[in-house]
Length: 251
Ligand SMILES: Nc1ncnc2c1ncn2[C@@H]1O[C@H](COP(=O)(O)OP(=O)(O)OP(=O)(O)O)[C@@H](O)[C@H]1O
Ligand SMILES: [Mg+2]
Image 1 (cartoon, rainbow, N blue to C red):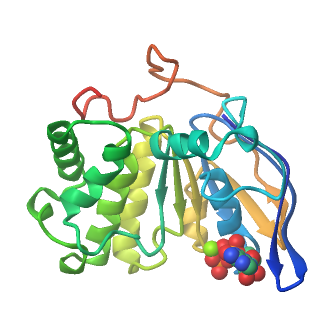
Image 2: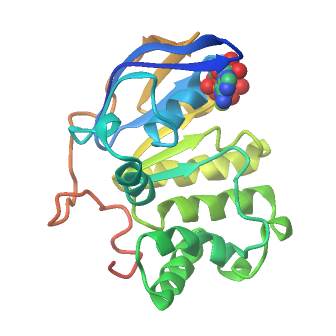
């Protein structure tokens, strides 16, 4: 599903280019659940941002379903990011002035849903996250765990094929973090491809595959744990959306 070939990324600091990722080669299969681990500053978020089309690599190629992302226009890349990829961050990144419902509905504006469709789908997704009673609350009126569940609802509402989570439990206490991990495991169980960054070895062990990054290089990879590439419930457009088809009204 995802292929990185000799991906590098460097940042310009004043007059010098500081290399961060040094030729990453990585293949992720549809349906896999991958954990990325490594010390602070090793390049995990940089790699996730490239996978999520939030950043472009300095060199190398990124193929998403065999399509070379690195050769696309900014608009084409934005479309892929909005519709096919969901992203969850450590600090939730919700818009503070919007309600939970409005936060979840927002990505659907760009995906071209009508207002009533957006409302209906955002409500269904928040209900699924156990937040039926909290839809009108703004982020500062929610607990950390609730905010992260709103963020996950927002990441899922366009029915992405890939969910990226950069330390999704990093800002949560261990019990709330556990609930979020349970939620992600459940989504993976329903067929969603998940890549997560974590500092927590017990979280990493529950994934199907652990990749270690050190100084911008992959230094260990437990290999494909989720079995061969599979496309459960792929729709007529060939996109796999098995995990929430029964929970949401059709697009
Ligand atoms: N926009 C930027 N400009 C310059 N340097 C950057 C930028 N973003 C990241 N870096 C540098 O790239 C390196 C890798 O950063 P990255 O955020 O990918 O690390 P990380 O593995 O996610 O760390 P952490 O576990 O602390 O989140 C760091 O040395 C960081 O200072
Ligand atoms: Mg990081």
